[in-house]
View 1 (cartoon, one colour):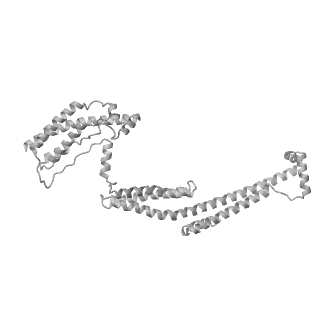
View 2 (tube, rainbow, N blue to C red; view 1 turned 90 degrees about the horizontal axis):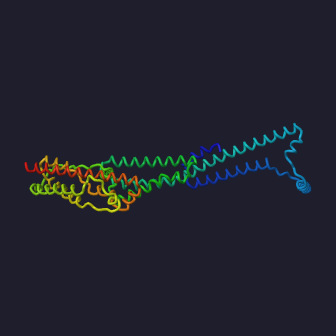
Length: 378
C-alpha cells in the first residue's frame, strides 16, 4: 500500500469502469487483510490443539466432574514458572496489538482510497451536469439583465461561480475526510444551483425583470416606511400647455377635500385595533384625493416654468393603504395580530403612516397655495 498516494493521484485519468475495478480490488485487499489478522488472533488466543478421540472424551469427562480454577492453577506454579507465563502473555498481547494497529492503518488507507475513487466517479458525472447548470443560469441572465451594460452580468456571473466554488470545494473536502457522505458532499453544489437555474430560466421565459434594482429599491423603501421622492424634469418638447385656470380650480377643490378629510378621519388618534387587524375598511377618500392630485400634477408637468416644476417635485407621494392595514390579505393581518410582538410593531408602524399622512395633507395644502400664487403671477 506504499504507493496508495500515487494511485490516488492517477484517479483523475481513469474511466468510470477502471475506477469501479479499482474499488473492487480494494475491497478484495481489505477483506484478505482482515481475514489474515483474524486468523492470526484466533490461533494466538483461541488455539484448537489436535488430540485423539480418547483424550478428548477424557477431557470432557474431567471437565464435568470437577471445576477448573485458573487462578488456583496459576498460584500452584513455582515463581519462575509464573514469571515465564506472564512474559509469554505479554508478548502475545504486544503481537496482537501490533497486528490490530497494522490492520487499522491498512483499513484506513483502503477506505481513504475508496472514497477518492468514488468521489472521482461522481466528479465525472457532476462535471457534465455543472456545464448544463451554468448554461441554464448564464443564458437566462443575459436575457434578464438589461441595465448596467457588461458590468452587471459579469458581477452576477462571478458571484454565482464563487458560490459554486465554495459549495463544491467544501463538499469535496468534507467528503474526503469522511465528515459527510460522498453523495451529499458532491451533490451539495448542484442541489443549490439547480433550483437557481430553474428559477432564472422560468423568469427569462416570462420576460421578468428579476434584477431590476429600482424595483427592489422601491420595495424595500416601502417595506421600511421610507419616503419616495418625485423626479419631474422639464420637457424639451411640449405639445399641450397646462390648463392653468382649470388647474387653479382643481387645486382649490383639492385643498378643501384635504381639509375635510383631516377633520373627519382624526389621523392623530390611534387607530382601532379591531378595524386594523380583523375588520378591514378601505379608505376610498384618500385614494380619490391621491388620484386627483396626481392628475393635476401630470397636467402641470407640461409647464415651462421652473418654479412650478420645483413645486411639483416637493409634493409628497401619498401612501394609500399603509395607514389602514399592515397587509392586503385578511388572514395575514389576523396572524400578525395573534403574534403579539409582531402585531404591536405593525400597529405602531401603521400609526406612524397615519401621522405622516396628516403631515402630508398639511404640506399639500401649503404647496397648493404656493402653486396657485405662482400660476396667478405668470
